[in-house]
Image (cartoon, rainbow, N blue to C red; front, side):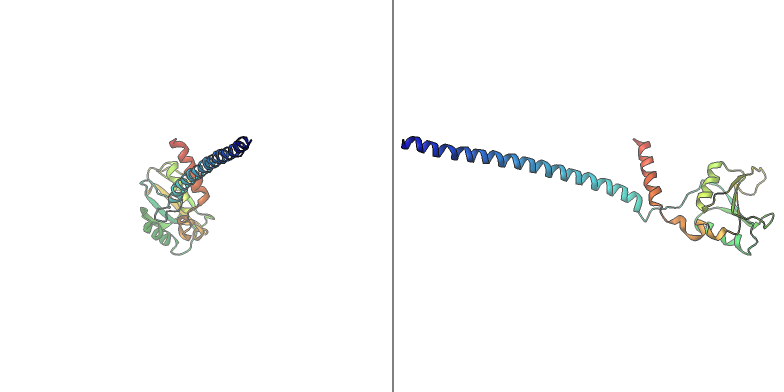
Length: 186
């Protein structure tokens, strides 16, 4: 009987160590799997964030609207002395080609207006975005001095190009543009 008793005692110990060893291996595998997946998810997340953040938050990036090769003329339509000259100076400092500035045909313009003369609609819209102006008029003219005329009204000092607002990144719009562009590339 002492032999049977010894076997009974030894047998459960082997099962316990084998059972606890298997349990340890199972837990270790689960832990490694979860850790590995977590690390992989973290790497993917960091890659996405670094890509998006470079695109969105790169302060060295030029956030201004770039125009195609068009010439502009600035016309004072509000009667405020020096308004056309000042806006011309701002546009030239930003690298835009302003061919001329002078008084408009009258000083009764209530709002700043973009007049597209010899340029296409895309160029007129680009100038409107640059300025933050929503009034675009298409007045084709073969004899125009410039491709696009900017007739400034009394609201000209509120234009984005004057206040500097066009230099600020609209993060939501940039984010949406990024994913729209990403969709087109894929």
